[in-house]
Image 1 (cartoon, one colour):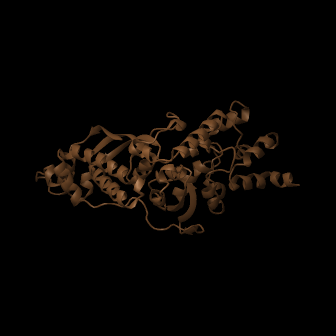
Image 2 (cartoon, rainbow, N blue to C red; image 1 turned 135 degrees about the vertical axis):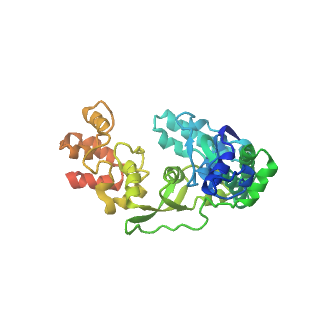
Image 3 (cartoon, rainbow, N blue to C red; image 1 turned 45 degrees about the vertical axis):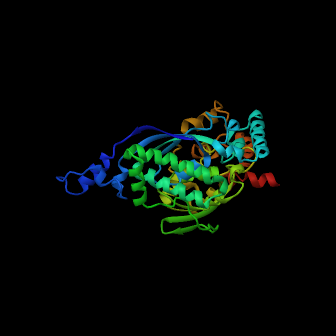
Length: 376
């Protein structure tokens, strides 16, 4: 595990921010403000490369609404060749991990889409990512991982202390000494990035333009949701950290989430997840986003689609499928918008609908009545 600092600002940026917010004629030194728990200490930041951390670590960092992160894609590092970083590798169930690697290898050799067999990847697997970390956030993150070392599974205790130490090394690069870093750490408050209460599933609520929805999704889908800053999230991800089998659990671990957002934000978020062309549907089971998308069918209907204005933003790709230059199944909504007969494409569309969400099944049925016919 290593945080490599690729670039870093001086704490003079914090002093300058403080000066410009007060008496601009009065000089301010960074030592005057480096312990102040305010946004002025977010101005200096470090551009960091996080080497050989776990998927668990990355998900905690991404839970901060201020995170600026770009993760290394699994299409570069083959998931079935993962390793478990550091001393965590001595605490895993080796037989479980051999089985997980074998399942991923079998899926890969069978030609399945990576999104399908990658779900066996354990949350303790290694990963790397780049992140811009402000001076203030580096301190707060260090305090939070130290806190997590006390409340999480004993199998994560030493690991989270190691994360804390790496973060404090970054803080030292800002202050120039561990003594000053500890002084700032003592003065600043600790945020709780993860919700610690229970999350109960409940019917969707539309409260005057703001919609609150709850659902249970795998951890890997949670990662796609928390990156959207305009939404408010409460989930029970912390249960995973408390579990004694945490090092052997996979990214398919179920998480209950409660999310509040304006309807405009929901439409933007759901647009990509409901679109026929951009959604990667797994071949052997239902659409993994169905748990979310289906809740909004009654509220938004086709208005959640990115083509709600009558124009497909992926027109070229959709046209390629229609003309046969793309082997994917042609979008029934694209056919409808362009007044193209769906009948010649019925077989492929019905086959694709087996793993599509209820949203799409209902839409096609309303337009064609095919699904009713097939039952007769």
